[in-house]
Amino acid sequence: MHEKTATIWMPLQGEGQDVWVQVEAEVVGDSTFRVLGPEPDGQSWAYAPNTVVRCVTKVLIDRRTRGLFAVEEAPDS
Image (spheres, rainbow, N blue to C red):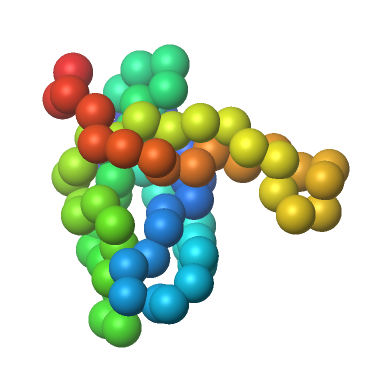
């Protein structure tokens, strides 16, 4: 079992526009997370399961809710 998990927003590839889905990730550091899987059939995540990603906090389109968005691969800590 994972120590601590969080829900992060993952960009999808090959959609023709910006599409993000929520995925579970293990907290690695202050802004780094290890993507948990498996990747659902029919989705192509920008970062594969077990990849450590850096996330930034952004305000969602409703302008009230904040979310953690995966923006790049990070060194494995």
